[in-house]
Image 1 (tube, rainbow over the protein chains, first blue to last red):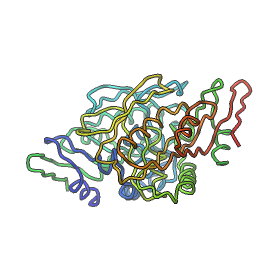
Image 2 (image 1 turned 60 degrees about the vertical axis):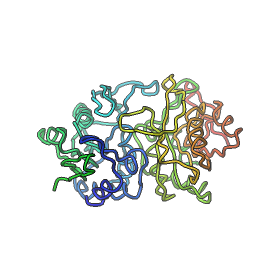
Image 3 (image 1 turned 30 degrees about the vertical axis):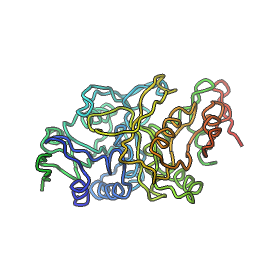
Image 4 (image 1 turned 90 degrees about the horizontal axis):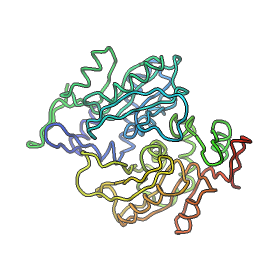
Length: 192
Length: 192
């Protein structure tokens, strides 16, 4: 998606050769006009797949999922990272290792909201090592739901997550795929 | 807002006399059509106030803030609960005590995204003890920005947060204000 690639070139910040900050427009400050275009693109890609639920993970994925859901006219469910007092009863649970925070945590979804009748589109802002996406896939499979695929804004294609998830037979559509980047030369290259 | 009150009566779950779960439509599974109506109502209430930024707090506020921001045509900033590797440099910070989780944590916003030129609308799903809202207000004041007010979906009016924040001279608009509720009688009463 050219619009997103151009925005990353303009407002993204590269740290070293592995960290890409997009907090000016995607995951801290959010440019709602851009995210609206992202939602439209996910609809173009997955609009004929019978999606009836969008599943994401807190926190950065939620806004993107909600804007996208308007185009599909379906509810959003976000997997929660901490079990709170207010979620009682039966939940699906899975483990996720965070690249950003350097720790392992549980994610949960109430069983009430996912079941065998559901056709689920996963949405997230980033795909790097694939742990968050793998965690969401596990929740969908535990629920007996059908996994339609994943819509990712930015994939760091030089990290193993995308290949790993695709090798499992899961459709992954990433709107910007970073092939390589380097802070020293302030350069970023996207996959064709 | 009658639509939200009716939905709370239909799909909310009361635990004891203080806990109201709205995770079927607002903060775990999200009914995007309902949240669209909520966004419209915030626009009706604050549309003439020159709002140029919407500030919320992860995680439950983000989706509501993003949908609402479409009506204002402004960016969303969400305060983050944990300092991550990917947020470097100068941040505003404030402390929040979580009623739900029973702990105190820091929230942060990058200084890059809030400043004296901003007119900020706060958005959140719940107002109970007011600690999250107070934390957001502190961030706005530290930034030297103008606080336009707060848009809250559900206020537990029998808890002190709403009165406390209003007594500081802050405009708070809550779309559903719960006066009392009781699991034993499965009853809920809203303020007029």
